Length: 464
Image (cartoon, rainbow, N blue to C red):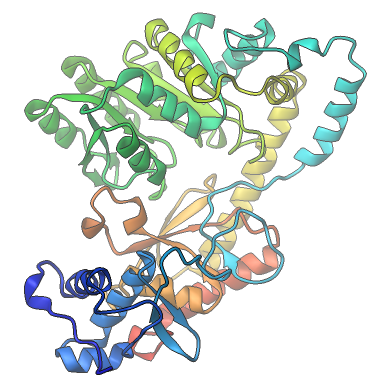
């Protein structure tokens, strides 16, 4: 077969996306068949009269869309339908001590939780009444679980009554339940222009329209929020005002007050994701403390105690809290009572405080390491945060930088993964510092990132 040459005149947008769109069309039409080898990106660039950067970006996007795959030393091939990504392409949650260094997962360290869990399970084993933990808890559940939830919320500054609280399987489930409670198919949901990626998928599955609100160095822009509310029928705003994912921004008090005032005036529900808030003891009070009547406040134990402790709490006005509990019943029937019991015991006996302190300490230590290694780079970070935001120079497009880092054994996530409109994503990547269990691997990965930054795409070892 002659070298593949995409027909770009049928497509619009950036040149690299024109190439990807032509690639997809040719695969669907059968011009390109599974297993066919594509031309090297430099040869294709010469044939099309574009830069090698453009074809490299196109191939990287083709890999991201699972249209093609690159094999070291062999080239780039059209994927077979349903072909699984290679082991190297997968992003496992398992914490490894060898292989690729994973900065892609925003999970805290298990820390000391294993030690405390053994003691707690022993205490549970000695208990004389475990029947409630094995029975249906689809309604309110044991009173002490609600009391623990209320006490945990109070630590963040959010006051709640029992009829205003719902217990979920982590914060992600809490967000889904909150969306199910206050929206209907066709409603408009606003989010920050860079947002927690699963929310985009949730909106799609729930039939919601989604629209981005601009971000600046202070976080979500109140003026843009107000302007959109003035021209559209907005149902809810989902946002993360503390240790924002992915930018690490924490909103100041005055901006929180402006956003809540707009929501109150416009009749918009606020879904406040405060999953990182407990890690930042010096942070501003939650938005829910300014506007409890229109805010659905979501938090959990998994970021501050242990990632496997999937217990979330949502505080909402009583009517919405009842709807959230119904959404929990519909989606999973109930949060597992045994897991909630473990969380409640840890909150009561001080274990939760000790685990949170340990997470903060490790976060600070790792952030200091990152600041030292990346001292001359444009990074945004918080000493209590689990991730940092690396703004890249123009010479390094984020998708190419991600591919190059991966080729050197480091996994990270580019801004487009968080963008409501991927084409408008800034040229930046997120690095999560807490997932790697070995600090030597963390240090090595950060050094690799710096080494890549010091080079240029034209002199890199890109496979594609």
